Length: 275
Image 1 (cartoon, helix red, strand yellow):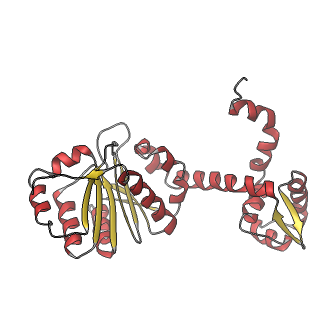
Image 2 (tube, rainbow, N blue to C red):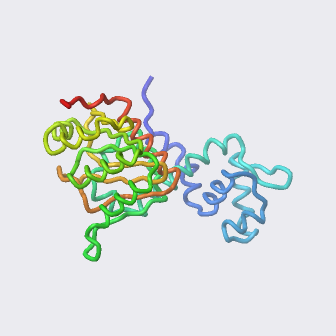
């Protein structure tokens, strides 16, 4: 049987596919109904449109069997409940890419695993922190505040500096649980001075663990109980961009960061060094 491509499917059903995204009202109503039943009055308030404008679009969605009337309200049909989450996912994806367009276009996002890129819309409620002339330590200061306010820390990194190591050590000494997944190259660095001396000083801290990932790591990420910090390499280079981080205090973004940590943690082995 000949394989059918997505382009073939699009050509066959392009009118139906384009219809939703060509109309602001169709898209808005479907997404609105994704959170539950809505009355005509609710839909007027959500879309900012009159009943005269909405009713023809409602009829269009009813004829496509995406929505139906139930006790005077409008709800998604079983088909609508299949379609709506995909529309919402695409809307959120485009939102996160456009909101911080420079961050995504100027950095190597291919260093993020493909399965995590599919969920990158979870990072919509984030802000970009940059080092600027008025505050040349903005990114580092934000990192220190993140550590200070954390109850626990999970991190993935291919880079390290003495200043960052000292900050992490202070966190460990304060009794906070810290797990760090590092690249194989960084592991070679950490088992040599001055970092090996730092590691030996933490031998009695049982809530501090370092793992080495066999999977290449080209990012720097820290996730805590309340915050996510993500840094990437400059696109087309081997230079990590220390001047820009994506920061979020949103629970959905934090959960994304934890999944990314677990992606690396599950395939990693404990760092072995001579104490």
